Every structure is written in structure tokens, then in C-alpha cells.
Amino acid sequence: MRASQRARGEDVGIVDSLLAADELRRSSSVRFDELRAEQKQLGKRIPKAAGEEKAELLRRAGELSAAVKAADAERDEAAARTQELLLAVGNLVHPDVPVGGEDDFTVRETIGTHRDFAAEGFEPKDHLELGQGLGAIDTERGAKVSGSRFYYLTGVGALLELALVNAAIAQATAAGLVPMITPALVKPRAMEGTGFLGQAAADVYHLEKDDAYLVGTSEVPLAAYHMEEILDADTLPRRYAGFSPCFRREAGSYGKDTRGIFRVHQFDKVEMFCFVAPEEAEAELERLLSWEKQWLTSLELPFRVIDVASGDLGASASRKFDCEAWIPTQGKYRELTSASNCTEFQARRLQVRLREKGGAVRPVATLNGTLCAVPRTIVALLENHQRADGSVRVPEILRPYLGGRDVLEPVAA
Image (tube, rainbow, N blue to C red; front, side):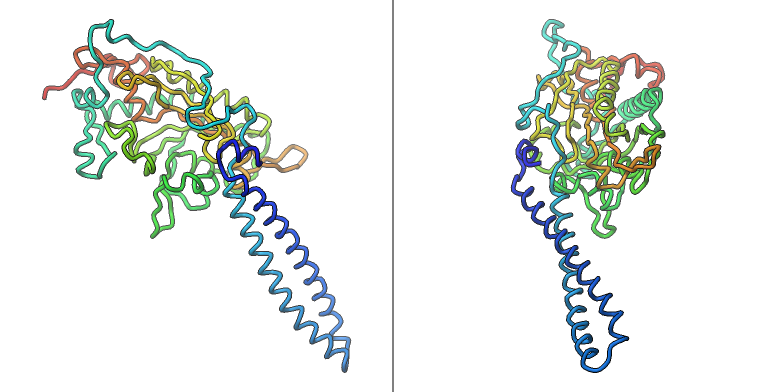
């Protein structure tokens, strides 16, 4: 655990604090049990005693009563402190994860080649200019109505979102995932259990009046779907594809990606989520990644797969693979999807367990993977499939969901 915290760039000392708190929790629990046992024995003796003996026993009973209350309070306080520290520790980092910060990832593979626009004889436009020309994106009115980093998808832009969502859900259901439309508001227990109230807390919208949270991903309600349940081992794996709005403060991103719809406060997403036996988790992570690669390949996007470095992992992830699409006007790859193995970290917090045939009960493993984060996917599609006249070619997989259109044409000003 110390090595994992060190690899994450997190506080290593918290591990020793946790061990000390847990030792106090154990010892105070033993002390409470001993005092309660003595109190019960004393309670049996008092009715049988008389005279000075009874008076002494009653005096001792008074002392024990106060001691039991104090021990009970100490036990509860130690348990609460242990739990508080436990929730502050991230999942154990997989030993194969590259150690370092955001830029210390390793590239697993690169798929597809990006276009040479110079050879084609024109300078590529960015997604916002293209989207405005298509009558598809309106950020000015989004800012007027809701503030910065909000937007409208209009006309063919709205149709493109629906096409992406329907095509993504179709792929997911064909792969055997159960489609889900999930709540956008969750209780603190769900948010905390999935690991989003630690390092990510600043990025979360909290409705104080209701003590509820707006989800930043449907991973949260999907992870909590089987909260406090025991699943029969022969019903695993359980795989879901959740569609939901997502809300993020984008704390700490001031000045980053302010143009267009790449980094926004609200967006829609199709998220895959799996409950599996822990020994199947690593194979399931590869399976999630393969579905993401299938999706991006079907959209005819050039992309690469990276093994995310330890310091860039979310608190719940033991290992994470990102698929990054090439964005022509930025001249670099940017994250479109992620697949994370959370091992038993979330399941322990949310008390999601499996029951073996012999009756033994243990935590499941949970995994999540983005299939389609809509705005970023639209960014990649517009920029990679643009043509010199401002029109955009539609990948074949989306055409049935766009009334057969093979090209998105600019609209008259």
C-alpha cells in the first residue's frame, strides 16, 4: 500500500496513520467487550448479594457503567477515524503500470494514420468553425444562457449526437451488454463508494439542499446498482451499457480547451460497466478495450492506446488504458475513451459481493469503460472527416442513424 501511494504521488504517511487507527479500533473494541462482559457478570451477582458486599458491587457497577460508555465512544471514534483514512487511500496500483505523472504513459499501439491536409491542398478547420458552418454547434448562446463551457447542439449536430448514441448502444447490445438509462442524481453513499469524493471531489456538483450529487459519469449509478447485494457467481459477469448526462466542474482546467466543446461542464455519454469475479478482471479489462477499439475503428478515426501512468490514475483505478484520437488542428492525440480495472476497490466500499457454489462470499471486481463521450467524439469526427468546402464525410456506421446521409453539408448563413 505504501508503494502504491508513492507511485500515485500521494501521501505515504497516511498508510501508517491508517494502521495506527486500525490498531486503536481493534484494541478499543477488545476493551469494550471486556468491560461489557464484566458488567454482565456483575449484573448477575448484585441480586444475590446483601449488605456491604452489595454496596461494593453497586459502586463497582456505577464505575463500570461510566467505563463502558467511555469505551464505547472511544471504539466508535476509532472506527470512524479508520474508515475516514481508509476512504482517503487509493486503490492498489497494478505492478505493470508505468510510474510517473500525466506525461509518463506508455503507448501500447497506434491504429490508423492521420491525414496529410497539406498534401490535399487545404488547411483544416477546427471543430467549432466546422460545427458553426454546419449549423451544428452554438457555443455563444450556450454561454449566454448557462455560462462558459456550455453549448447547444443544433440541427444536424443534435442528430449527430443521437446517431452516435444509437450506434454505440447497438454495438454494446450486440456484444451482450444490457442497455441502461441511469439516474443523474445520486446519494453521497454512491458517490463515495465509487471513489469520487476523494481527489475528484472538487470536480463534482453537490446539491446541498438535497444532499445529492450530479454524476460526472454513469459509472457511479451503474457501480451502485448492485450496492449491498450478493450476486450468485454463476450470474457473472454482469455487463451494462449506461447512457446518461454527465456534469463536471472541470476544476483546475482554467484556460484549457476553452474553445469549442472539447472540455465542457455537461455532456452525454455511453459508459460500459462490468461486475466480474476478481480473477477475471484483467481479461475483462482487455475485453473492454477491444470494444472501445472496435468503436473508434468503426468511426474511421486514427487513434492510439496508452497505458496511463500511476500518478494520473483516478483513486479507484488499479490500471487504466486510454484511447486517444488524433485531433488535426491541435496536432496531437487527445483522450476519447478510458477503460479502468477497479479490482475490488469499489465493490468493498459498496458491499457488492458474489456467492460461490459452496456458499463462500467475497467481493466482486468492477470495471468501467467509455464507449462514446459525445462532444469529444463529435470534435474528432468533424476534424478528421472534413472536406475542403467545409462539409464533413459521415462514417458508414452512422449513416443509417442519419437518414442515409453520407455527407454533412454547410448551411446558408
